[in-house]
Length: 272
Ligand code: GLN
Image (cartoon, rainbow, N blue to C red; front, side):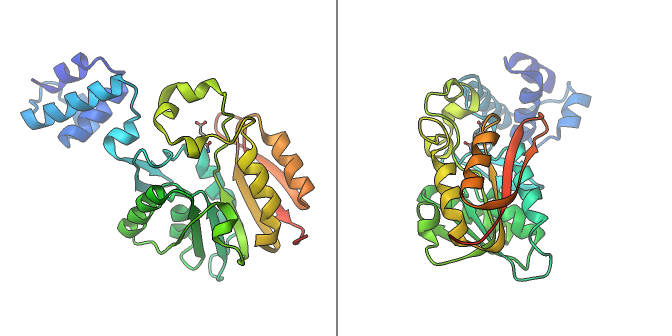
């Protein structure tokens, strides 16, 4: 069996077949394209066939491979965590604008999952003290593993949103909370079918977690501290309303690469 036959016979989209074959064989994708006649050993072939079969059942590539790139970091992912999305890099970018490069800034990531937001911020701002919360012990295990491998020092806390950090305040709070409505048809399509429901579903209207986080955030921000949240493509108006009701100022929403308002944020007017 050679590369060309494996790619052609996999029954997968060409690009996905190449990614899986590269991972199964250790041969870079460019080499696979350049040398379709190259032979594949039996062990690699077996690995590729097993992945291809699972992929055809819909399993996300990130779960098959066990990793995903996020903000230049290679993160381990398992079905215990949401697969980090490109859109979430926008949260990192907005946060980095508010985390000073040399001061002892305190940053909180709520619902950290794989640790993506916390780890990316810590890597860019080593002097920041970064805390990350998740209610799922198995998610925290994945996040801890990532931090260990990347040699990034994060303070991990298990708990439900702010209950894990009752008396603490932060200069910057970030979150990619669950924001899909429980009846959303996307939940039974694509990667979402395999991802943890607790990381996806934000109650009947998708806004339950965001509503709670925005309401409680001012009590956990230093005066003038910033909150940045990812949300659904059609939720920016609702999130703006929550931020305004909680006394936030300079409320802004930012577009993802698809042109959707995907991240909103604001500056705390102080605890109330
Ligand atoms: N961005 C995910 C999606 O594909 C949802 C992630 C989340 O709920 N935080 O819809």
